[in-house]
Image (cartoon, rainbow, N blue to C red; front, side, top):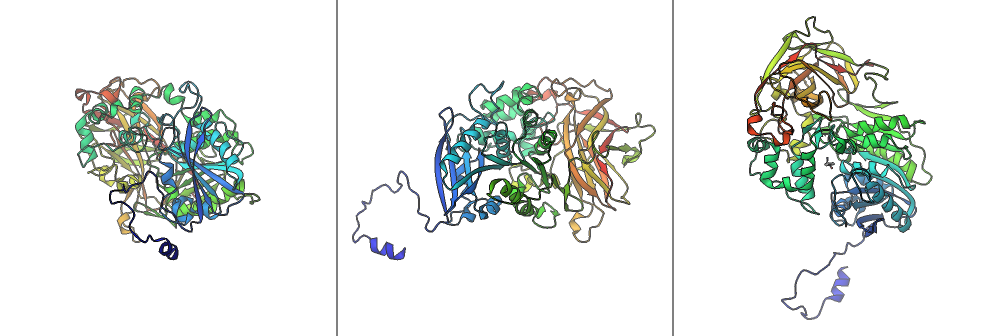
Length: 626
Ligand code: PG9
């Protein structure tokens, strides 16, 4: 190159001083690249063209294609570094498949970044909510059709992979899969935005969505974050009052998706018709699907298990529906997985999964002549004792149709917790005053949701900071004499009353470490969340039709916590914390019944006294410890 430059160096200056220095289009040459990058516009059936980046290892022949359809900028997905080396430009999570010679494709979904068309957030399928000719299922079909006809380096076999929103687009492609789609790996897919994924959990609204909506829908490219001017999100949201007032401060109440959320606070047909687990349950399962999620997924903890359960009855030959759960945060499967917050695992669990399980699974269906992979139906990391478990199915214990039933662990007098129900359970209670002016924080203040170091590991953060608040009820067992193992979804069964007419219930199942942990002293007395969630009391009788809570009357609140595969070790204690706010992760319940909490007035936010009775229990998916 030096020789070439020397040869072509001009003998005299010929560029005018005022020649503009930024050309209309220019790409630096990447010399000796071991890949080819093609950027194409792929036409969909309605004429809209979608921007697609195709990365091909140089010299590839009969190579499989792995496609990701993203709202997060396809060009950036194949540009981790500026480099002539393929491994350096793709994401960490893609390294294994690239070393197997795969072709990697990223596509901007319609309406985002380089793609034409209108953007609709998690665009519903053609049907009652979508009167156009296209959705993510048709766009995936048209894309795969084009790719196999126009990529001469490929063997005509396509897999789809992606996490979160991208996991949602993978599931959408399964609705009516193109015949060339041979395998799918949805990771932390967004499945049901109301029940337990990004937008709400059991009706409680996740406030960080307003920032997300501004970032995603204020512009075709990347929008801006909300300029709160306040370091502590707790303070910024508390000061604003209702979520509608908060949104109005930044003008994001004018964005259509904000309006859609505010118009559908309950689990009405808008949400039910989009719930992908329900939709997939009505389709044939044609494509082998490995659904993956992090145990401590702080964004989409619900969807993966819901999809696995919905598909399981369709997997008659037990060779198409697979579940993987690792000790990861949201999308942590694609990064380094040897630690999460204070927790240390036995190695890089994310790499172990990608290299030893996902890659052979992809190869089996995508590579010509590859052997059948040894893929367990369920691969689940067992927390507490930190090891991978290969299981024939999931869950191992549940209310019905499982080998083991659920076993209640009861709230007892003197803030004890135990498998014996109190004799006077329906009469004995504990109470606390919940004040919406002083909600319980979800992480210690100042709260910085946009700080990845706070947000990504928060589900494993020490719950000790909250256990002694007067508005948190904390029940705990004696130190365990033997292991207690759970494998399934704990069910909350609360009997409770409030002086208000609405209430939120946050229930946390916690593993309390021994007072001293010699090999890792900072874990001494640590309170690790094992399964935690929120339920908005107005939905106790119907998720679709809320109703006021009759003041001072005992009501039953029954809801499932996230799945857990955990061993409480001897010397540890099992703890349950109960509280009525989790702020500013979730919006505050005013504790006065109003038709739509998004628009609650300042005068609606009232203190209430909440009583929790001792016939309440958490029904644990208990299995024999082996
Ligand atoms: N959890 C993010 C998301 C998915 C779907 C809708 C909205 C947000 C994500 O990580 O993509």
